[in-house]
Length: 134
Length: 106
Image (tube, each protein chain N blue to C red):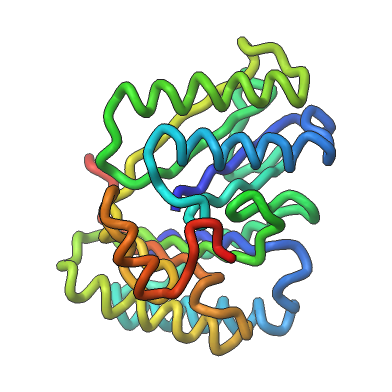
């Protein structure tokens, strides 16, 4: 957690663009929130029924830990929309980005309930993991 | 029925293991929440999953019971869920994310 799930029209985001967008998603989330990269998952789908596109060509849905400010969420949405536009060439108006708060205490990762935002250092220390997961 | 979404990486879990996990999830849901699981099994296409910007080996299992549960119960159930998942798949605890939510507000 966070989990960023990106659904798009078939072929709208090619395989070369996906790692670039995933790297941007990871960097943007960590820059804005201070979370470690090891927590950031970015999954790409095409025409996936579990995440309807409606009128968009790409829809990025981020399930993020609760506790982020409205300003942080707006920065995440704006910068990630720009990344998809830059790497996939999809017009900005055809890209939808939404985040949803998930309480950290609802989530088990690494065999332990996730830390609240800002309390990651002790969690990582207990798990002998670096922020990048190496 | 209790909604249960499983997101796995392409080629990561065999059909046999998927069948076993579906059965175990259903039994888990019935025991923990009093109702069987409505499982939505979602596979991330090849080269489409990333964790920490690297190719992902992570699975996500998310369950939304119909009634709120206390945190001690939730934690116990999450450990049980991730325990049988890793035992079946051979994944490590660093490769499984379990989520047990409260119901959506009316």
